[in-house]
Length: 162
Image (cartoon, rainbow, N blue to C red; front, side, top):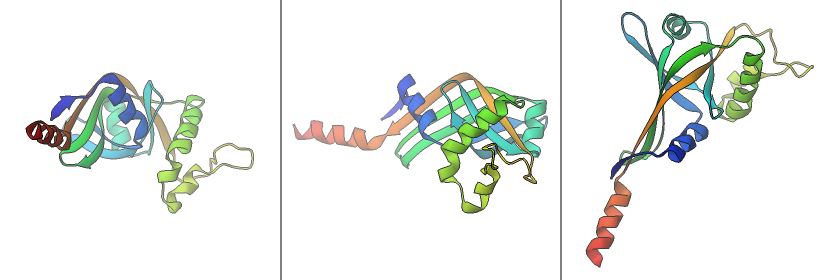
């Protein structure tokens, strides 16, 4: 059975996942990368080091983000978000970074956790050699689809038995 996710199902996917794929495009070709994210019910927040992705997004802020919950090839839910990249300034970026830290720390490898460590005052350490850009995606449109062949097979089997 193929179908369209309702608003509650879409919200569940957005809130329950921490890794998505973000697509952006320069003048020549699309660029697709996995990112960790946090969804607050209004925006999708992420962070990145300076590089190709940030350079492209500063020139063309239109993005497409895909997150999914895959149980099998015939049982999945997938959400696509269309939106605009917004680089956050100090103040907003610290709050967003705290939320990211609290929501994705358990998914990180030990070698990457140090980038999120706090100093003695409880603030994020600023002596990291990597300058992190904190950003959010302002959501313009969201779509969701699902496939669940296992349910369809079970319904068919039940119907045939009766």
